[in-house]
Amino acid sequence: MSLLEVDDLSKRFGGVVAVDSCSLSVPAGSITGLIGPNGSGKTTVFNLVTGFIPRDGGDVRFKARSIAGLGPDRIYGLGIGRTFQLARIFPRLTALENMLVPVRRAGLRALLSHGQWGHEKARAMEMLEFMDISRVAGTLGGALSYGQRKLLELAAVMMARPELVLLDEPAGGVNPVLLERIAEHIRQLNGQGVTFLLVEHNMSFVMNLCHEVVVLHQGRVIAKGKPREVREDPAVLDAYLGA
Amino acid sequence: MGALLELEGVIAGYGGGDILHGLDLSVEEGAITCIVGPNGAGKSTVLRVVSGLLRPRLGRVRFRGVPIAGLSPHAILRRGIVQVPQERSLFPTMTVWENVRLGAYTVSDRALVDRRLAAVCETFPLVRERRHEPAASLSGGQQKIVEFARALMLDPALVILDEPSMGLDPKTRTIVFDTIRAMNQAGRTILLVEQNARSGLGLASHGVVMESGRVRLQGPGPAVLNNPEIGRLYLGATA
Image (cartoon, rainbow over all chains, first blue to last red; front, side, top):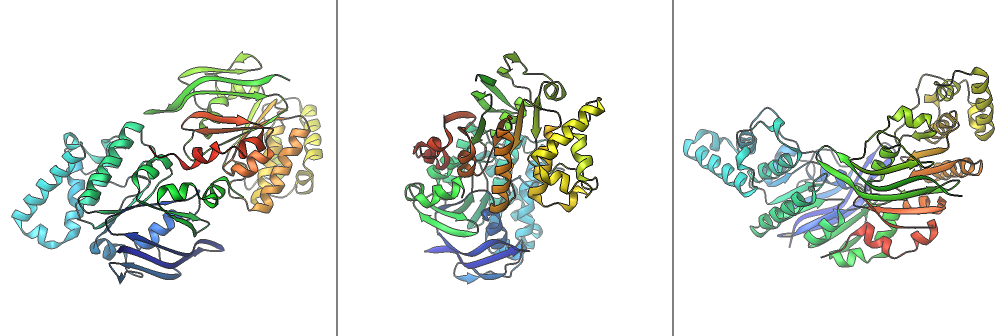
């Protein structure tokens, strides 16, 4: 069953067609990879799905319900979280405070009920421990290392209890040791029922982690399937090597 | 002809981690050497090491047999290595000719500058035709060619081009690549990084595929392009 369905989605910027009648689906419970050469439209698809930019045509359905045209806050509230190429965290909040921002957004009830608030705080600490960054819970976001920011962003997005998380280059600029840790965290969260759609340039990371892979080229889907099938598709290599 | 530039066991990176993990590369005099590879392979980092923008942590860089690793960018420039950056770098409100002349800013012999300007106009007719127009009035591809012209004003022994086709449509890319070929035929040794592997390797007398900070595959451009190994380097391997 598809958790997310992108149907005939299009977006142009001036004369450039960034996303061109793109259709893809993300099976519930999967880790799905969205790959393609630079400029193929991957991040634009993310921005369209999460409501950051308006679409020109097509539809996006989440749990069989259209979310096209909704704003980012509504889409977030429905259970789609996302991270960014460059981790977006609040530099003047501590790591723990960063974790609690999504909770506030998740509803007033959390704020009003003391018990609930304490519970969320405990959950935030658990999540920081899960990511092995609990020792920096009191450190300001701005003082964290690049790798810690990446882990914190992933931890924070989980606080809103999303069913689907879109990860934009989770392995970007990350050393091989941390890379393996991030992959493992994604696998474990996936094991707990979270569905992932990720954009990534590190092919070994994608091929080893993803169940399904969708390949974009010039805004169009040119291949989809299991990692092995996609890797052996000559059209995919052609796209990567250029015309 | 021998190697003009040699890199041996170069390890380099920024702050936290290394990008190049023991890179060996040799650029033959008179050749067009093209480095391709997936995102994050370290292609641009190699260029930064050669032009002195990044000091390697370990390893040797020799130009005409003389070590240059650790020298400042201007010292390396003086030895005859000029880099054309990836992004647009002309001064938009200055004329084409003023921009090209700036390439010889460090040359005080005015007669020499004039001679070089005349020579550059021979190689790039565009520079003469558009000489009085502001650089900003030129298309992206034309600006790239003016940048090439500016680089030649120092009469460099090695011209480095970082992704010259970036942001250009296919037709313009062909024109820019023809210009690179013409520069090479006029005697310039060229080292370039290209994102479009097919056209880059098609142009190169020597093709180099990098992946994870190392040279994984090299040889004559077309042979590299037809090597099945390139697929694994671009699309990864499963464990």
